[in-house]
Image (tube, rainbow, N blue to C red):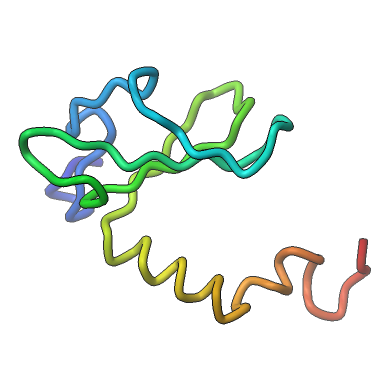
Length: 94
């Protein structure tokens, strides 16, 4: 998919080197979430938000626009994902 298909660029279209970014990390273990807010001459910090999982053997990186990221953060603050943290509603609790 390209920016024309999705309305936002892929990592390749952003022309970003993930190794050159400062990644904020949720923890030290494999499986921790890492987030980066790249800057370039074409956009400001936070125009695009990159997310990856530490230790992902494929090295997948998701690209979110600022509105998507703000909506995610708002939902997390409101507890909209709490069920996901403990399993499916009505399912076994860890």
